[in-house]
Length: 339
Image (cartoon, rainbow, N blue to C red):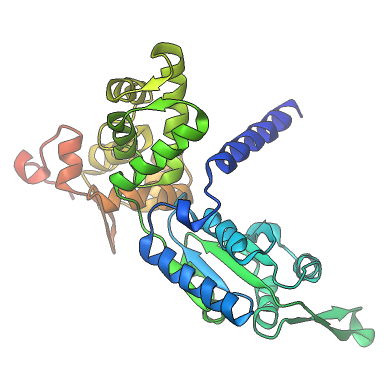
């Protein structure tokens, strides 16, 4: 019980930290310019017509701002946002309870919507299209369907794996946007703004050093800032310079290219144990002691984007750049053959 309470307290503090740094307006949201412009246009058009916003689907790797954008959309429309996640809604009754409690114009944000049970997902079809749901009452000969009318609302779905969303559900979203990884310059701006909110001084070199190692992800950039802030507070008069950032990030074993301990472990496993690949995802997961889904969603996108890893029909293959980062010669230069 003590461990559970400690875990709940840690999650609460992390959520409070994220909320403190999360922008609440489009003007403060950095990056994703095309997505931001499309959503701003949709919001303005909906408000001019006095209508609710079309349902919105946001996809992309974790930590890019899907949750933040959902709250910004609610703020821009002057609406209340109710938040839940796909795995939490296990029965149609859970969904019915959520939807029937809405006020006109409310937003419903469902994180990891691709993990929602199929039986629940089917109830969303009529809710999104007709703003009504049909609930079965009783069982057997006494079973009957009751239609519940719903207020007009906006559903915002977030997913890291859009391919797992059924086509009928995906087709009911009027606005579908994919978020991409951020450039270091954009992340440096986010880090600078976050540092101001946290009350820590930061120089441009320090912000850029954090940004370069943040894997193109604002959430990671803010988490790194949190750790660098601790180092600066204890050792550098609460000011993050380039040298302070380098020292603190080296302590965290995050190299200048943004590769952390697990990234290097994955690459070392593919190269050292399996001759550079191809090797299957489940085999990699067992070898490094991590879940396949975590590797596929949290680590692989960055490794592939940076050119360290390739996906092939036979499995994952390490590139020449991966060998270079590990200080090794590619197989073709080693004169060694692997089956």
